[in-house]
Length: 603
Image 1 (cartoon, rainbow, N blue to C red):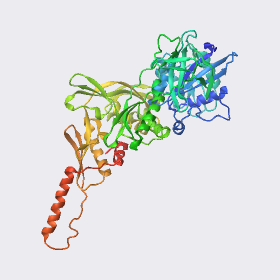
Image 2: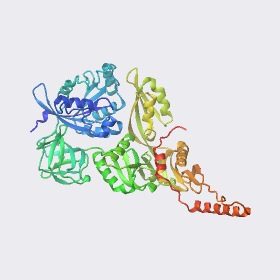
Image 3: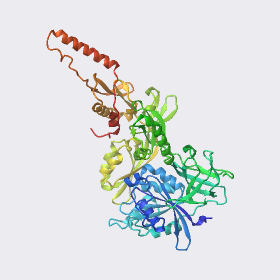
C-alpha cells in the first residue's frame, strides 16, 4: 500500500507559451520516466494538432517516481494544462484533481492575462501555489521585476519564487524539492468506501471507454465490480494502470493516486466526466462534488459536406464530446445544407480545434455555419429562455426584452499601447472599468463588453495594435438588455436560415448589405432577375439584384415584318415573368462557404 504522505498531486498552470510543457518534459527526463533516446519536445502533447500548433489543447496526466534528499521515494502525479483562454475548463478540471499547483511565469514577458485567470482558479479551488519564474537563461530575462509583478497582480508572496530554465534544466531540482516540501499530501481516507473522481475519458475501438480517475477515498482493484454513481451502471474492472507517461498496468490504485480504469464500457453515454466511481458491494454514501457544467458561449452549425455522412458525423461528435465535455451538440436541419448539428463551444479557437479534430480523427469533411453567441429572450408572457441561434428567435411581437451576454475583459498591454487599445474597443460598445499598472512598462485595463464584439476578431486586432505584446482574458458576468434584431437573408423571397444573424440594430444594415454583396458575386445568373434582400421582420433594410441572363431570340430573323420580332420578344418577356413566379433559384454551397467564411472587414 502506498503511503499517502509520499504522494503529491499537482498541476502546472500558466499563460500560453510560458513553458508549461517544456517544464513537464524536463521533469520527466530528470526522474527517468523517459530516456534520452525516447525524449522529444512536448512529449505529453500527444495529438498531432498540438504539435503542429505548438499549444496544449488537452490536460495530460503523468506519474513520476522521485527520490528525495531525505532518502524517501515520492509518487508525483503531474497534470500539464492548456494556457489558452478557450480551454480554461480543462484547467479547472485538472485543478479539482490536485492539492497544489506550480504557477509558471515567463521571465521575459511577465504576468499575462491568463496567468491572472489561472491563479484565481487555483486560489478559489483552495490549492497551494508555488510561483516559478521560467526562462531565466534568456538575455532579456528580468526575474526580479517579474517576481514583483506576481506580488502586485496576484497578491502571492514571491520572495521565495523559484528561478528556473525549463529549456536548459537549470533549477529543476529546486522544483522537485518545492513540490514535496511546499505542497500538501492528499487528505483522503484509505479505510473509507471507494470514491474516485472521473476527470477525463477517451474511447478505444478495441477496449471501449478508458476512464481517467483520481482516487479520493479507499482503493480500487482489478476484478472488482464498480458503479458509476451518476448513471448507476455497474462494471467489472478488467485493467488498472498509471500514466508513466505511457499506460502502465498495475493491480490497484490507492487513495490519492491518479490513473486509468478499463471495464469493457462500450456505450459512450455511460461515462460522464465529473462522475464518482464507487465499489458495487460497499458503495459510498455521498458522491463527490464533481465539476460545474461548462456554459458554451459560441455556437455554430456543423453539417457533413456529403449528405450521406450524417451518421458518421454523429458518431464522431459523440466520441469527441466524451473526450471534451465542454463541447455540446444537438441535431438540427439547415434547409439548403441538409441535416447537421448545432454545436456549442467555449470560444472561437475551441470551435476551430473541434472542427479540425473532426476532420482528422473522424475523417469527415464538414461545413460550418456563421458562429454566433447565445442570447436570452424574455417573452411577453413573462417566460425567459436562452437561445443558441437566430432560428430560435420568436416573432418580434412576442419579445418583451432581448438580452446579450456581457463579459468582463482584462487586457494586459504595454503602456505605449493604451491609446490604440482604447480606440480599438470604443467602437465595440465597451464600458471602461479600471486601470492597474503592473510596472512602469505594462498595464492591466478592464472593460465590460458584449461577448459578440470579442469572439470574432478582437484577439487578432489586439495583437496587431500592440505589436504582439497584448493579451486578454474574459469572464462571463451575465445577460443584459440591448437593441438586438434578427437579420434574415432572402433569395427570391425565400429565407436562408443558415445565413440569418443576430446583430445590434446600429450595425444591422451595414452587415446585411455586405452579405448581399458577397452572395451577388457567388450565385450564378439565372434566366430571370433574382432579388437578394436583408430583412428585419417584415421590413427590408437592404437589397441587391442579380441581373437576368439575356438570350437573343430574334437572332434567327433576317428580314420580314417587324411584328414577327415583336411577337418573339413579347413571348420571351412572358416566359421570364412566368419563370420569376415559379422558377427555383439554385444557391450553390460555394456561396454559403464564401459568406460564412469571410471576416467582417471595414468598408
